[in-house]
Amino acid sequence: MPNSAQSIRIGVFLAVFAATGFAMKGVFIKLVYPYGVDAVTLVMLRLMFAIALLWMVRLWRLHASSDAPEAPIAPLDKAKLFGLGLLGYYLSSVLDFIGLETVSASLERLILCLYPTFTVLLVSWFSGKPIPPKIKRALPLTYLGNGVGISAGTHECPRRLGWHWFCGGQYFGFFAVYGVEPSGDRAGGFNALY
Picture 1 (tube, helix red, strand yellow):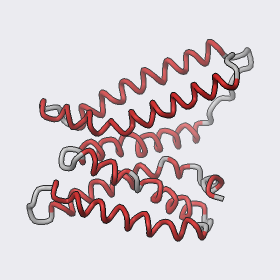
Picture 2 (picture 1 turned 180 degrees about the horizontal axis):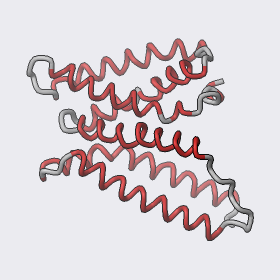
Picture 3 (picture 1 turned 180 degrees about the vertical axis):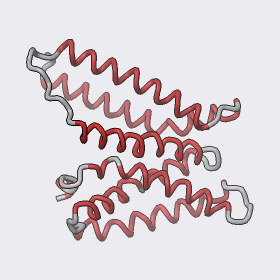
Picture 4 (picture 1 turned 135 degrees about the vertical axis):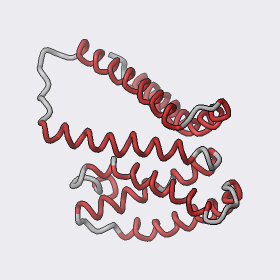
């Protein structure tokens, strides 16, 4: 087992690697579209790689775990996990990839920054807890800043009548659906906010 300094270095490396890969996703997708690949095919390929990776992690955990058996997942929890995965991963990925057909990767990254704010709103709505005052003051600033950035990038959408609303609507649907996944923990969602 690695010591704590080595664990910290590994953790920092993995965090930087994950953030870089997440930020570069839109760029890689935009590079593939000229070859005639559609959004659904790209999502399928992404899911295949994710499933393979998750199975490898699962097998590694089974091999490395102690003799103590894991508690089974209740059928209702399995159904909830499936629903969250379908909405929070598959549907949001399809909307994201379709949106990348019409906007640049940089505009997609900017719009993606809104999903945590939508998660805050969903957690407040599901749990019935009020939004803390600091966050309540920060939300309008977040939307205002993104609005300025997005309005500067709307030249990327085709100029057909109403097309700006269509591009924005796709991404609103994306981050609304993407925000469902983290807000699935109805009671504990605000624990990190206080």
